[in-house]
Image 1: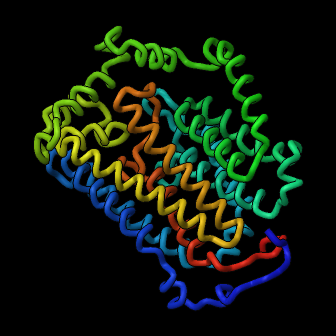
Image 2: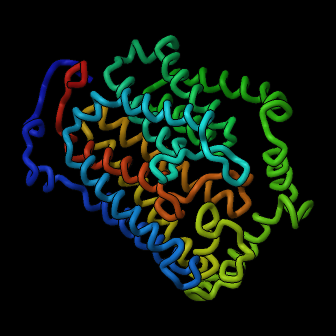
Image 3: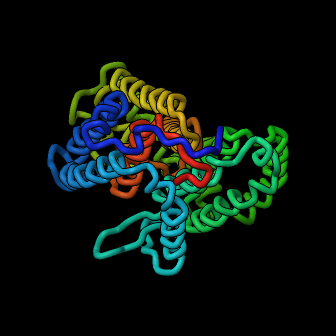
Amino acid sequence: MSTTTRVSNANMMNFSEKLSRFSLVLFIPMCVVLMLSIVVLFSAGGGSWTPFAMSQLLKIIFGLFVFFFVSFSNIKTWIKSAYFIYAIALILVILVTFIGDVGMGAQRWLSIGGINIQPSEFIKIALVLALARYFAWQNSVELSQFKNYLIPIFMLLVPFLLICAQPDLGTGISLGLITVGMFYIVGANKKWFLIAGILGLLAAPVIWYGGMHDYQRNRIITFINPEMDARGAGYQINQAKIAFGSGGIIGKGYMSGTQAQQSFLPEKQTDFIFTMLGEEFGFIGAFMLLMIYTFIVIMLFWAAKTCRNRFGQLICFGFMLNFFIYYFINISMVLGILPTVGVPLPLMSFGGSSLISLLFGFGLCQNAHIHKDQQLSSRGF
């Protein structure tokens, strides 16, 4: 991409012009999933707005304010602040190590003004933003030199190690996959991926015995043989399979899922909400959600391909990877295809940090689409 300073009329767009470029094909499916989350969380609360549905609705309203603010702001704002946003997110992750709240055996949350946030969710979007800023104005020669990947590797490793120590292996894996995907997109040498894979295999015994907690090893063992400890480590996944399978083709009916309504299904409002959807709405309901997710990924890919500036392309590609990894790992986990890890279902699971960070990411992609014809200087602003 040329590094000369060429700015299109998009640089001087007023609000009505930006609104005319707003992508409904990205916005509408996002809203459909958000509305579906309220429907399912209402059922998870036993047909009551409390404790899940009303709380999530308020978070969605706040998240949409964030989404629209980011969408219609100047793209240069996010170029200039990319590293600063990453630094703030990283500081919050570091603070979790020292003053984070412990819940369900993990130290992942910070309490700020009485509000609990999970910084590991925000660092995923912040990392995409920072990597997009870093790679956007490098030419093909620079991208072929390994030394130019050392800073991005460092940007990954610091939060990765801190998050895995919380422990939050699911988010750590997500960070790694997002970064590897970004490296591939910008054109990193294919041999480096092979070398990294071999090193990962060689390090596997060290990670297994020295870098994993007992419960994490038990989850992998249970994944291989779920019946080995059906009432212990295998309880979640076995109940999830029972619930999802019992839904059949059309489901048991809204608020009629026995596994979820009688509390046999753990974490039905968070990590295992897809299973609850499958029990009550059946294969058809679960398949429709999967199709909406796939459509969103396709539209994010389209937004990236139609963007004329590299920064916007990388934002859309990076967030597309993030979103896909979110739902691929979660759905694979609850169906027993992958070991159980703590990854929420995007836009569906109860919780504010994941929701707000995702709506911020969608806002960045809308912003990139609105400014898709804007050409930026080699400095980015």
